[in-house]
Image (cartoon, rainbow, N blue to C red; front, side):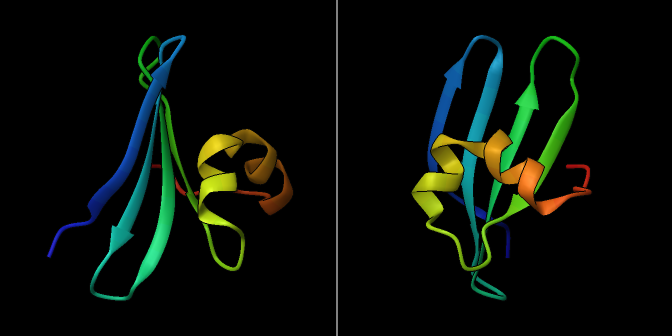
Length: 69
């Protein structure tokens, strides 16, 4: 089963999605730069999902190395 998009926003060429994986009940925030096509995924873990969605780079900096999307 595919991840489901719960929220989406776009601003300044960046697309941000809040994704839910029903298989393992995990939330992630995916960020894609439309200009460079670079992407990253941030596991929400025990953080507030909407906070990670609204401030993905702050959480990315706290978590260290990220998974490529």
